Image 1: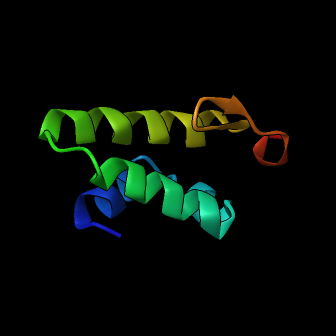
Image 2: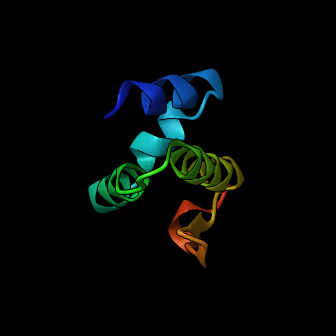
Length: 70
């Protein structure tokens, strides 16, 4: 995991929510963020991942019932 992603997860208190997701989702998020060529796109994608983790029930802008907050 890139340092800037780990830092953002820890700062927002979302590392647990990230680790609760299945490995394929963790890998998808990291790959999606890292494939961006421009730094501003990486930051935008990181922000979206953080928002989805915080909200729960969303994965890559799709409904994800298994991660919904109870």
